[in-house]
Image (tube, rainbow, N blue to C red; front, side):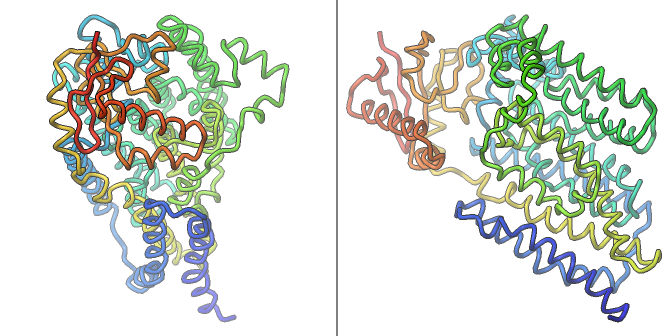
Length: 545
């Protein structure tokens, strides 16, 4: 085989074929959900256009200077912030996109302004009894100025946008300017990252910037003090961030760095876990800490967890239960998979992911829990692109071009996957929007309310705010006080979403809400609730004496 033929095989066959092979489960999965169908189309287009894109880069030999790439990086950062602000504005205007956790945190901030420290009635106690997230204290002054969801999602968007230039600086450790720019763009549009800037807010949305800054000091400046500072900030996001810090310590140990690079993070991780699960969370809510411990191997205290692991070495494997692996697969696929697997730094991300899945007692990784994987996998991709480019190059002169070609393919795949999260259907006007707005206006200010999760953020300014339980009978049996009003959206879409879960419990939930809304419409008073308004699947009822 001639050198030119070998060159073409490595460039125009190996890379697209690898992407096609690794995305095969996406095409042959026996599922036809709308989102999956969109993914199949976008990934197919990505693979089809990858060959002409690679050829264009090879023939034109585009070479961007460091200064130009740096300016383009800041432009990408500004574009990302503008795009996310626009999408958030559209989703809020159309009252879609937000979920119950956003309402829980907003309600906690509102009750704090009333003198009840982060209390919310959904958790029946302080939010700090369930999650140790001191970083929320920094959002409280902003909430007093902007008492709505922008006080939460605004800092998240700003943090993600600011992280973009630092990702470029990290990528430059291994890649030429053009390739680093492509990887930065792929990071910016990656589903794991871009989903954190949407209205569904969780504490983890704030974790991306400190994680990127940790990696920046770890790889670029090698400043240990600054790295430790940002590790402390990261651990203030949520108790589960101790897992990430522990993984960083393991990576430093494997790389043979000086002892303080691995001993200090490991010590901080263990101390943070003990502080969160042993002191802070039990202080605010004994039931909250017990709830968290039960998710950890079914135990109720930190001591029980440790004893269980020591006396039963197989406890880690027992905690892993078969479940949906789709999100985990999509996260790896969106980075191109091959470059990721060529880096030992992927082990850090995998270790973090496995421990986090154990805490969730499931292999169904939620996107907000995976926020931290964006920066970690970006490092893995940078190293993987560097190694893959060496394999595809016949001499050193070809190396920068091969890096750019590989990074461009990763960017194409990231665009194909990221398009699912910013498709117009995610922020278009719902059919029942007018009915929802009218029902929201009918709810008296400060009246206690049980509400469908996606509407909770819009009605959070009341002391008692609960997310609609799976069935109201649970509230009666568990002794929870019934709210003065209940506002739920229950239509064919809600019913189909629950039925798609495919469990006996989800089927019973559908039967419960079908029965509740049917009794309301017939003039009956289920659980002493009297219908006040009903239209287009929106039901507002009031508790009677």
